[in-house]
Image 1 (spheres, rainbow, N blue to C red):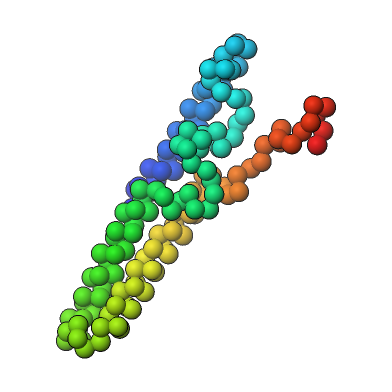
Image 2 (cartoon, rainbow, N blue to C red; image 1 turned 135 degrees about the vertical axis):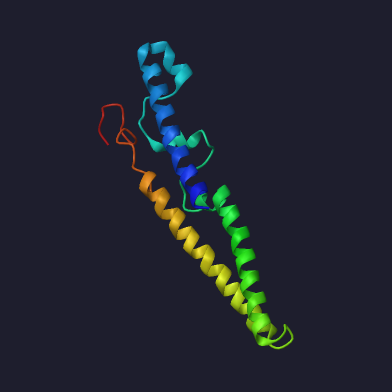
Length: 142
């Protein structure tokens, strides 16, 4: 999971680099801008190519999150089964073993989501920095 998060972070870095190349080519001649996009140096431009916004829930829809959910289910099931083994069978305390499994799964997901959020925050701060050119009228004032 850690490597999947790192791959996502590196992907954003590559998208930023590609956006810089497009801006360079767009600035060569006036006609080029229609083919290479805007001149803004903004992370939103890079994320637009992924069709992803940088809202708080966007991190929950990554491949790393999908794998973390599967791992949490497997891990919590394993903890429940281990607990059942030690108490002598599922019929002894079924609600306790299920509750323990759910608790362990939620803890695993919480730790993962915090880790992933911190890794993405280092690259793409939320909320994203605002564009100083946005909100200006024709005279250049707000």
